Length: 337
Ligand SMILES: [Zn+2]
Ligand SMILES: [Zn+2]
Ligand SMILES: [Zn+2]
Image 1: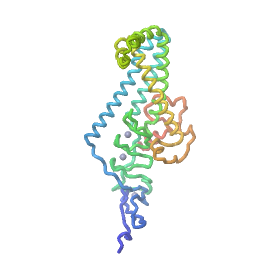
Image 2 (image 1 turned 90 degrees about the horizontal axis):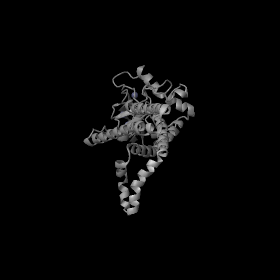
Image 3 (image 1 turned 45 degrees about the horizontal axis):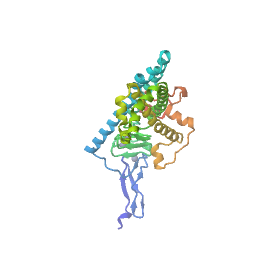
Image 4 (image 1 turned 30 degrees about the vertical axis):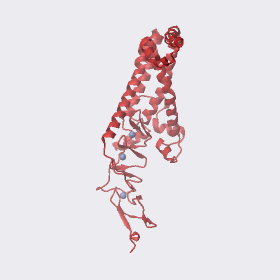
């Protein structure tokens, strides 16, 4: 008797119900859905062991995040010591320091929250050995590395070694995923960074103009000897020479201007592309997979899913827990239920 004609059975990973696999042209389906609990069983990749190389790569990624922390902290430190006290005096100085400090605090708070909050925990227990209600694992896959159910909207991140609900992307600057739980902090961080960088650029430009005589004499002291001697290769040494000979405030001002000029286009591009995806009701991963968004929510509704049902004026507020009405709040409600 032909073996392929025999009905083949498999057990559902979630409830253990045996499923008769459909057969077409002598080939059995590899992916099947349980008729009782709705869980999907598909071929699994074996979980990878953590090798020395992957632990080394993780160390490098954490080191990079530490450098980002230092860079973020260097901007207010230099702004408060090199730029603002030289540019302003009296109440104007006090107001500008308060404004800059609140910007820096919001950037650092949202950066920390985006790193230290779980990007999107999956709150589903495996139902094996217990009575599983009908439809309880509808469209859930099984994640082999996590050994746990993975809902349709979750993705497994091999760098974070966890499944993330509504994962958008793994961000190298955070060394963490951006998912349903920290998307608000990520967007707020980018928005505050745009405002902060623009303000820094404006303050540095004003100082450069105010001190134009000192700046010109400093640069001409470096440039004129090179141009006169014709040793143009010495241009490569101009940065170390500048750092050694320039006064402290001018070196700090130049560093800040170079940093924010390089950062602004990248941050703006990231923010615009992230908002475009949110308005389309899609994550970055889904856009890469070419998966069409299920529904196209209105722009305000799409933003409310991230920022909550409070008045938009309150959206930029510094708050650790997800505001009511967000997809992240619905997630933590289900957790406590
Ligand atoms: Zn089942
Ligand atoms: Zn997983
Ligand atoms: Zn990740």
